[in-house]
Image (cartoon, rainbow, N blue to C red; front, side, top):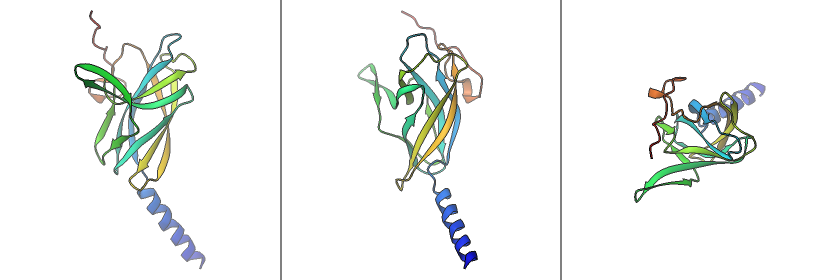
Length: 164
């Protein structure tokens, strides 16, 4: 009887794990550093899910509010808006990057300085509605740094120069 119970529990646990929406690979998470008194910044990373799922919530103790945002062109105007979730198709890398989908940290509790490590909780939801949280840490990079060139960890390139 004991053997059957253990076998059943292992099978259920393995099944739940295999369908876990948090089977998401998270690459190169980073946050843009801020200047003093700045109350918002962005966080960026690459997400690749093993099974269809979506990113539905983000939390961070450094901000009063953390939201999933999208920047998109609308009639020649760049607009940013909150989205309720971000689809993660199985096996397809989804980039959260400047100028596209990203995490917006609002109502910052303190300045985010270069080299700071910012903790996050990412909440993923599978097709079955099951949610799972994943804890990550993102390194703060300088204000004038864009995403890593070619997706290589640690390699950074200056952002395009701002021209008037």
